[in-house]
Image 1 (tube, rainbow, N blue to C red):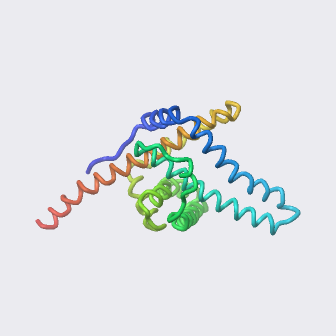
Image 2: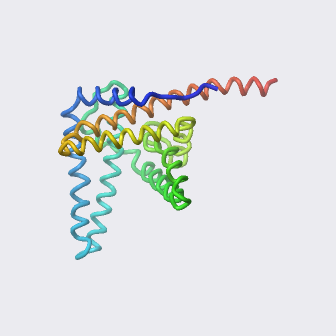
Length: 223
């Protein structure tokens, strides 16, 4: 069986190069995304004690905005991975993905929370195993169950290394935050593209493994 693998430094370098070539595009995306999600969230927090019903409404608006932006970020990252220059409007092109993404997010959250209740470790394991569900929804148009199943295949054999990648991403963004917060305008796009790079690379390797193993299984069956 062909073993899947990736280089963390290679993914980060790829993300860094894309970020440098498109810095101001990413600055605009991050500012707009921050405003769209931050404003309703801030209003909800300010109304929490005095008007809980209105606060709940703004929390729903925040949740909808967060879902739309998450889909848009994935679409933008995939465009760069395809050597295309995404339009700024890509951030809001969620049509056809919204409810699949919502269903997948809910299912993913329930699985991870259930794992955390079961002594934390299973929650971490399942969080890594199913982490690419959003890309499977947006890129492959899969439903919630299919997206989680596909993410499981993509992360097979590389979960420990993906855990290490997660620590590296967290460390890079912490450094960006410590650089007077401005550094996040460089580190967030870098790690965002690096993450998409890993998805594409591991998806390609998964498909290669499946295509390699299928003839072998067929030969055994025929024998």
